Length: 525
Image (cartoon, rainbow, N blue to C red; front, side, top):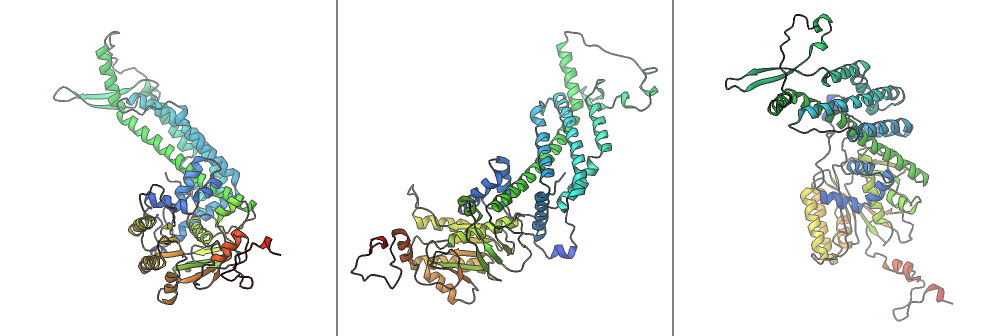
């Protein structure tokens, strides 16, 4: 049984609408090393820590959802409406989650021996577990009534409607009656035949007369009473009889094992999906406590990205305050190039854009005042790395190797975030490498957001109108608000020097001649 809280069960949209949209399922998952790079580059662990608050299940569930973005706007909106219900009805969600925890503890509390070759023990254990799970299904049925009355999202209402039928009092009464019979309180009735070679075949379990609804049919009058009692010390006979019993119960044992796995699998899936929503609710509360804005993103826009006040939520969580937000409107541009002063907020904006895309396609709120973006297939990153401490690769070799893995895995409609790619070599070589990769990927339908100090690279794209790149520039005033503007040849290194050493060399009015030593501000008369 499917839960349907993250992904709709079936597609109820009109056929014409389905034909015009991307598939609801996930894209091909990223290779593990690229997924780890993405999580590291975007500082995803800070976000997961805020969502999980130390709970391993919530962290793992949230990471799984965030790193497997959905590209269908209908699926994204399905999750958004479910999350909206979770924000309004937190106590009911907590009750559902606690019920799933208790149901999954049944395996721990009841001895379970699903050992092939021991059908009697397997059946007996499964009957006890199914009996305990039936009690939890009964509680779930009660909770479903409240869900149908209070919740408005299709995710929760459809789940409640399905469970209302499958866990109805009559269905659970039938289940319990069957379990009483499978407990074999009056022994086991089997039929067996003899094959030509003398082996016993087949061996089938039968329902006993005690299940017959008429009393007279259960009376032994008129029925044969032949019996055979094994001698007390007949060990071989006892083993043969036990083997015969196990053969008769083998199919029933396997069927009840499948039933246990299906019910516990349902509770496990429901717990995992609720854990993600609980984490998303916790993140909303945390950001709001910091007075950091959040919004419901629009995944149905034709624009690649348009946002107001976007910021990096991980930076907000680290500093415990709302960072400076940025505005951005790319219209249809698939390529964004960010240049400008050092420490002007370029890398922070890049992370904010990547996290916003992942959060939107997970069905979460986004760290911005407004956010609209076209869903992508997957998000990949190519960020500058520190020098290899093992001295296995040079820095450029390592960058080229990572870019090679990305190019092999990337697909049209994916999003690539580049931060100072190929800055480990000289201006001419780095610009040429990055330019060739960027043009090839953009021509292949990949969206790219790149932060760079390579002027030749950025200037070549600015001169090429066919690429259709958009440009942002970090100003030198340290306000961390980027503005529209093409690349400049300077990276404002003097500004960085001034902030580090307390000088004002960047100010042309006080800039000393080349033969005059720089004097810190506090030492000047």
